Each structure stands twice: as C-alpha cells, then as structure tokens.
Image (tube, one colour):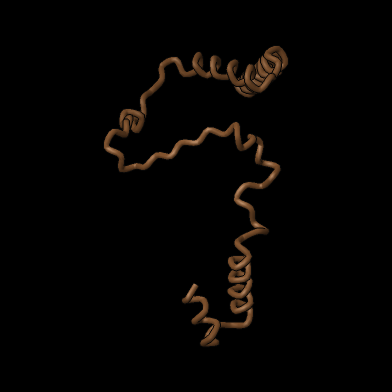
Length: 124
C-alpha cells in the first residue's frame, strides 16, 4: 500500500491509473464489503453443519500418501466409470432409465450412420 501511496503523491502516473489506484485503496479501506469471499447464493451449508479441518503441511505425522502422485492405468476404467455414474445418479437423484436410453440411442444412431456413409464411399 505504501508503494501505491508513493505513486499517487509523486504524480508520475496517468490520470486513469491514478483513478484505479484510488479505487483499489477505497475498496481496501471498506474491507472488501462489496466483494464477499463467498456469495450468498453459493453458501449452501449452514455454519453449524460445516466440518472444517486445520492442517499444516509441516507436521511430522502427516500421512503424505505419495503413491497418489503416480498415475496408474486402470484396466477396468469403463466398468469403474459405470459404477461411479450410478453412484452419482443416486446422490443427485437422477433417474437411471432416462440417461441410459438416451445414451444408447445416441451411440447406435451415430455409429450406424457413420459406418453406412463410409461403406457407400468405398463402393464409389
């Protein structure tokens, strides 16, 4: 902040920059009241229901789990993805039938159309 004040007092900056610096200083003086850290529409969990953890990174007994930093190929990716999709639908309350039917009809229609057009091109 001292640097900004020095710039304002020296007058070595343009009028537009001076206005911007003054605006920033005013916002800071008002303690950012017009810029909340968490907008009300996103504050979905009541304060008493929130669970927070304070953790410092220099604790000696911190379980680092460095194995998670290494990529491992999942041979059963599609199977596991279906499991997680079912869990997601259960949590979000989505219907399983509507999503499955829409996905399968889209896949069948698009793949059949592409293969038909390819085979016609080969015959020409």
